[in-house]
Image (cartoon, rainbow, N blue to C red):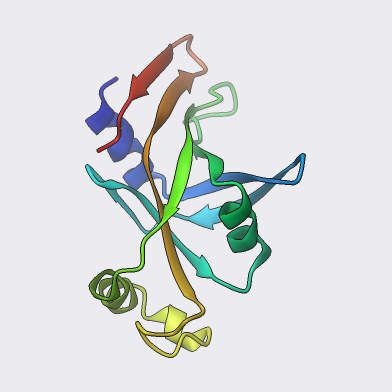
Length: 144
């Protein structure tokens, strides 16, 4: 599986688990990935949320994307991406996010300049792909 295949898998299965570290305890929650391409895997959150504070304190993160199998005997496929999150403070990127995800305004985001709107991405890391039919690939890669 190539880096491009991994990006495509994530794009096709954007609901994923994001695992952070809070002090010495792992914290996992479900996120909807906004986008992924050669520049990274992108997510948004609110600066007031604990997940944002956790990433500021410790940017080590792991994502887990999952695609269910076709039937109950097929456990599907999973892509884990571990790396370092970085915050992206780019007004044009935030404008693009709000144009694509208009529901964020319904959730209280006032605009691209809203100080509570935060975008983070993973640009480098290790990718591990697994399927229930025995495929297991460790893909060490720079995501950029």
